[in-house]
Image 1 (tube, rainbow, N blue to C red):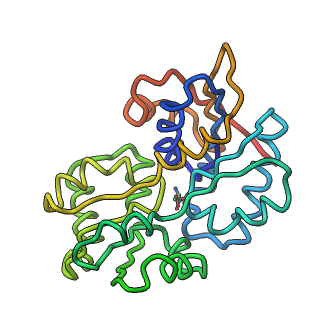
Image 2 (cartoon, helix red, strand yellow):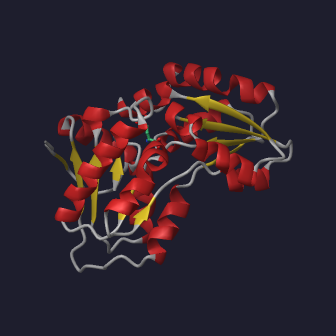
Length: 252
Ligand code: DGL
């Protein structure tokens, strides 16, 4: 699994819940976080190097647990490597099925929202709807710092959801793997009728369909290009009950 940081752990916890007998190696590319403001080319190069490393370490299925990296790189990665890939995209289709006000809000990174892929997703599933988009860079910073509640989180939520709430959106898409960690805070701050969509469990179901190998001694390794100490201090909050320790990873 690959993400720019700890966000993809929101997907890891879903995959581990469904496939507890599967060994998972997760790379948090913290030295390069955030991905959401980088160029697609940079992300392609970076995720290609990380994929190569995971395959050398025995990975047979790669989950790009990051919407931004999926949008920027998954096609190039599929063309480059002979293993199956699962990527993430904002849940526009389920949101379109749920809205009663014909208005949905999409919270995602700048990179995820600005490309043709996102326009295509909207024109395929939500052409008839009002779609209000909002990049949320502070959400990624807050989650990376382990700040999942409190004043800073609340003011970021008010800032980022203001326009979509004013437009009567009733379904909000958490279109970045970091954001599900703020779900409790979002649920507290937003009116009760607002529905939040994230795609972590759908990714886990897709992974299960590909039937990754079961092992008798499954393990979870978390690697980071940043500070392992920092991630280790966040793990009890982000993935309670999961026994994993973060190790350093250096790539050239
Ligand atoms: N977690 C990532 C995503 O799903 C990227 C966040 C970032 O690094 O900007 O888009």
